[in-house]
Image (tube, rainbow, N blue to C red; front, side):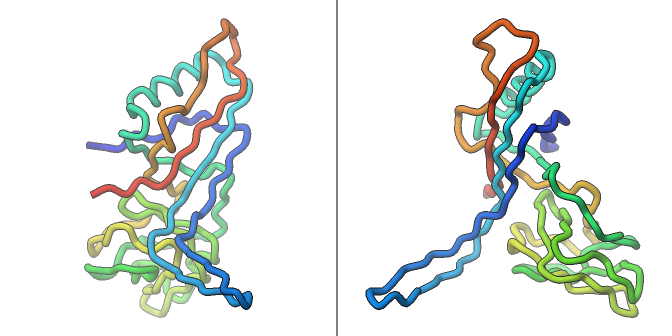
Length: 199
């Protein structure tokens, strides 16, 4: 079943950020013990202001279809701008890849694919480059990114680099607009969520 995409009703404000899975403990002599674990994810918190009644109804219908946090949806970061060309026909190069490195092929040989902090989507999840991605003479490259791969993509899987999105779920059961007053415009409300990882 296809995953629904969040409606194209842009928030007035959007906080879309990485959440790291790192634990820090301070000892009595002020030394830090740090444990970095896999399992980082994206979170978002959007604020909508002065939304037309019809659009607010559309948003509510979308949330009802999700049945709260039970549902999953794809969402993009409307504050992000890609700077790279991502030229060529870039696909995954090899099966069984895991971690924070992905081998790809099909890029323009010898060219900058994209600068660090550009993003790509593969298998419904979004990743952000930690280093500039430069193709070798054969159009291959090892992309280094955050977070680690959630799904191991199959060889030949294409990368989505135009408006990459991430599979999300709602933070809790209390998300979306309230229609407590009869108005043509629905005023301030929030919707928040985070990466959905499910077996």
